[in-house]
Image (spheres, rainbow, N blue to C red):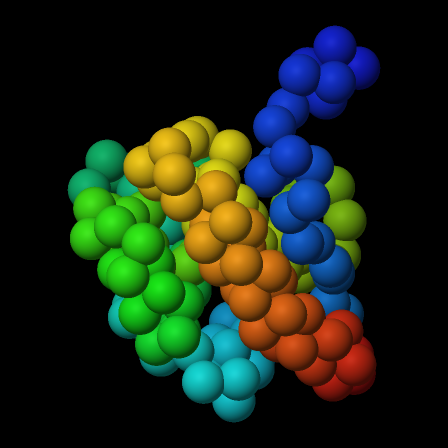
Length: 154
């Protein structure tokens, strides 16, 4: 990414969580899913993007990539309490992927609640409530991330 593109990114992208694991991809996906569940996130779905692309488009060159879609009841409740339309920005998604350039498994999470904040999706008089939602989400995801980084090594 060019310096200009990096400078123009919103805080949501700049504040994304990223780590690498030195465990096999097939072990990393359920491990990351379980770490979310241990922090009371409910798994909505796990989808292998590479398999979907190959199955639907016939492209077999997409690198292994999984979406772990989760939702935390407190985050969902608070978002709905702010404005029911915010539910369209949920749930949270964590990406697990490989890149040919290295021998690592990458784990990446962009906060849905920070996107709500940065995109201005909530009614104009809800700034404090959105800030509280972003803070709560950050605290809950920090627990997940700390555990992924602590236990995600062979």
